[in-house]
Length: 177
Image (cartoon, rainbow, N blue to C red):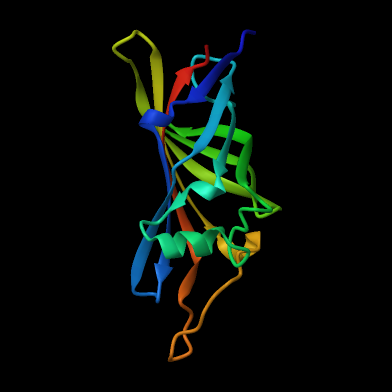
């Protein structure tokens, strides 16, 4: 059976995360540099192999001081762990437009299994005749499970940062050349 290789189109894709600050508001961050792809054996993505990596140094929360702190050893330690990586172990159709994507996520040298939701957005040909597939990937992880344990206390003794990180990626895939 022939396989098809797909690559993430970075011009039409984005990867974001959200974390609660002081338990009252949400801070959103983006990874500006990333790469990834998929390998399929069928006309659809059922049982696809999916992989991606994020450049930790490209984290952007729209606040330079916060970004510098996120890159430091307190958080991602970008100098020691420059990439966040994911490799799927399962990509199964749940219903017509939804897949469960399970795989190994590695952050700061810690690898844990995670399951993310991948909602199929559709397929279309671009202006150059290239076939494209779209997915919206969402999920939630606990940052402490990946060694991201830094937290400051507020004046009242509460935690400044939430433990749960919401992940969101809008991904457009194109056939690899």
